[in-house]
Every structure is written in structure tokens, then in C-alpha cells.
Image (cartoon, rainbow, N blue to C red; front, side, top):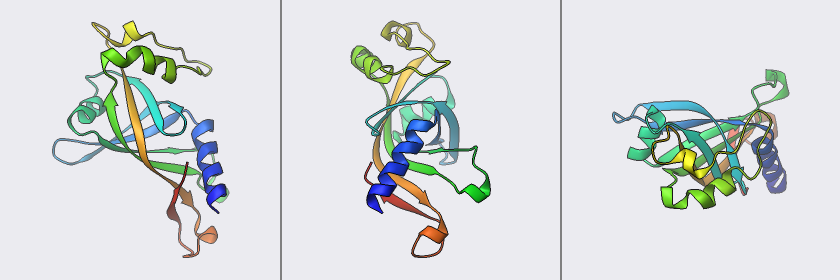
Length: 157
């Protein structure tokens, strides 16, 4: 099952474009935000955002995040393909932007574009963020899990 979970996780990550980022507010309340992402090696996830956005301020204050990537087009009878990721997030430091922009924008999908480092620094309104995964889990339907209940199962992605 391990190889199957890895394949499923990679398929979900490769075939979707938005992740739902979970951060924590100052008072501990959760905050979720959809962000368009790219990834490198299923471990580094990048997005561009305003440092003034609440989720960006939350990342600045508390780097531990979680997110989910899932196929929202499936009908309930088709199952739920989802990857849950625990990660540590940060705004990419200005000194590292050349390297990370090359990584984050190595592949640019339809309707998107690569950002240049100078657009994500200085007086620019946007910054590059990176989350480094510490754990991947996949959604396994109850009929496919030994317990008979839907579960999250850790996958080596």
C-alpha cells in the first residue's frame, strides 16, 4: 500500500493548483486561505502573496502551518483524493530570491507567469513564501482502510 499512497499523493499534488493553507491567528483561532502553489520535489511548496495578507502575518508570527491539496471536482461517490501536509513556512529572504525564484517558477502553468526576484522585494507589493513539508498524509476511504473508517495515513512522498 505504501507505493500506492506515494503515487496517489504525488498525483494529487501534480494535478491541482491550489492548496488550502492553515495558519493560526494571534488568539489561536485557525485561519485558512486558498493559495496558488508550485512545488519542488513534493517537499517545498511556494506561493506569492502580500506580506500584509493575514495568512502572511500569521506565518511571520508562527511558522508552523498545515495545508491540504485535494480534487474538489470529484463527486462524493468517487471518493476524496486529498493530501494533508504539515510544514514550516517562511517568507523567502531577499538574499535568497534568485535561487528560490528559479526553483519556484521553473515550470509555469497555463494562466500564470514567473515572477522576477526584483518584483518580490524592495517596494514590491508581493513576496515569495515557501513551506517545507515535515509530514505528508493521504486520505484513505473507509472501505480501503483496515478500520473501516476514513483515515489519514502517513505517506513517504
